[in-house]
Image (cartoon, rainbow, N blue to C red; front, side, top):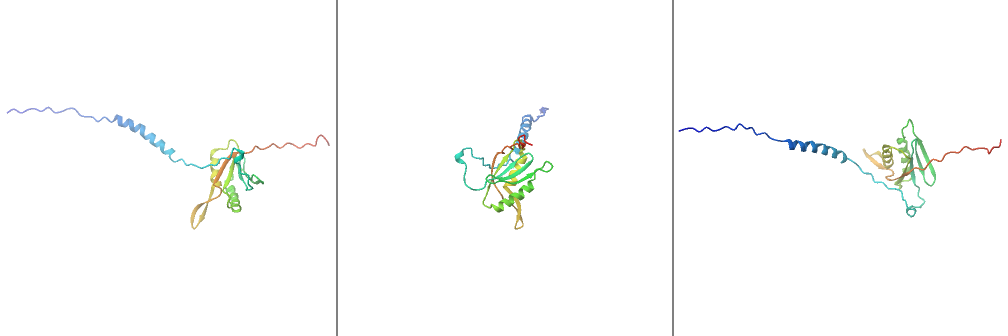
Length: 174
C-alpha cells in the first residue's frame, strides 16, 4: 500500500489590525478632549432690566460692587459709597471685601441680591473670584466647614464712568 504524501501548508496567516489601529488613533484623542469639557460648571446670572417698566422702584437698598482696574468699591445706589478698597501691589483685596460683605449681611439679613458693575477690560478670573466672594463664605458650624450665604443673586452691568475733576479757577481775579 502506498502512502499518500500530504502537502503541508506553508502559508502563515497574518492578522491585519490596521483598521482597528486607525480607529484607536482617532478615538482616544477625541475621548480625552471631551473629558475636559465635561467638567464645566454653570453659574446662574440675573441681568439688569432693560425696560423702565421692569425696574423695581421700592425703597430697598441696592448693593453694588464696582470693579475697576485699581479698586473695588461697595456702594448703595440710593445712599452712595459704603467703602472703597484700593488695590495693593496690583492685587484686589478680596479678603477685606469678604469681611465687609459679612458685616453688610449682618445688617441686612434678608437681602440676597447684589449688582456687579464692571469697568472695561476686567479679566475673567477677577470677575469669577468676585462672584465667588459675594455669593458665600466658608465658616465652621458644629465642627463642619460649610458655605454660609451672603448675596447669591448676582446681577452684572457696566460700571459708571468716572467724571474728570475740573480745576477750580478764581475767574481771573486776584
